Image (tube, rainbow, N blue to C red; front, side, top):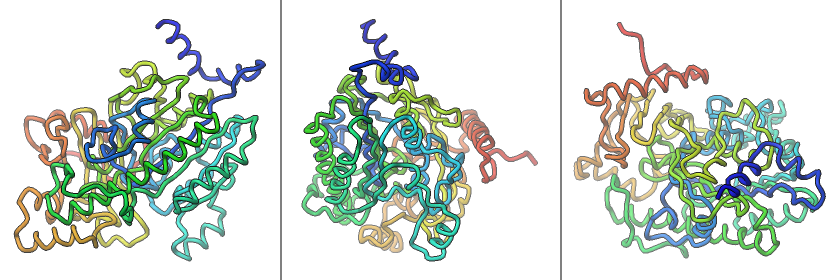
Length: 473
């Protein structure tokens, strides 16, 4: 046991691989494959305990690595979240709360650091979302005029596709071009389980499904949820192709594989919200040389922790501006690593005008393992779903609300005229986040402490929102 601890400490020490590379017959630093699913809430994988889904390939990854049960993105939206994953810095810090913004050239992405230290690097598959958005001609003009699309200069290989077969072809093309004398890093992005849901051949039986406790149980909602799970089951088959290919190439043993969702699913009180289904995502890490298989960690993980973890395993010093924490301590001791508190933000979504809270909402959250505070800065705007406002199940719920036929508890959660400025939940007693404790005397001290910690974080990160603790009159 002592020998294993010492070996692990050596492997994780900054500069270990660089020193070893100078010695003859020493293996090169590990290859790194970062697999990113799109709009994927925890717990919707077999290995996360959801009973009616079959995800054998991703589950095998968990069996051979470490599964983090409490991993959270820095925002419930792809652009904001991916910026933090790519930089190891929170969304405010890198000024990426505007959905269509490109990552500024002055902000370093971790693949650049890998590249400078001898890695062949690539990003492929689903749009990585950090070069701005080209849907509006006037925006394209600005991007091109000022040279704001920078990722072609940050990595060796950059390619984008939404087609499943094309993603695997890009992946094999990248490996074919990777120099044999260099380790490689590649981000493989998938569109599943992002809407539109079209994985008909992968859907489970809607009537067999266990629904989240805060959802109304309707036939149309079950059908929609089954389609979502079908997307995840299809995703699993695609992930399996990559994992099998690594094994066939003899790369499995010396490749660190990370699987993570970019943010929560487009589900009721999911994507676009700071509730659990909006920011709680699966995170699995496999690396046979450092990680004993079948481990489960409940440390609090943020999306900013991915970059320092990959840099540490690669033997590259983590820059001071990176505020994430490496997860490598948890590889050897499940009690180590993680955060005491997690922070996340909600900013603009998409390119639409601020006609509802789907397009434009501003909020912040802070939580630990027991309590969560949500600060709705524009609380006057009611909840409006992201990406499914036109779906049959939602239109049916709206009709039931209009006719007074929707059960009161669901009506209050989904169709209140306005939200509360502050929401506070006991996550152990109320994991569905339905009983708002904000303002209650019995938790007043805890609520104030959370607000003070959030205020501290907002000030340090130059947040533009009003602070949660106002001066007394």
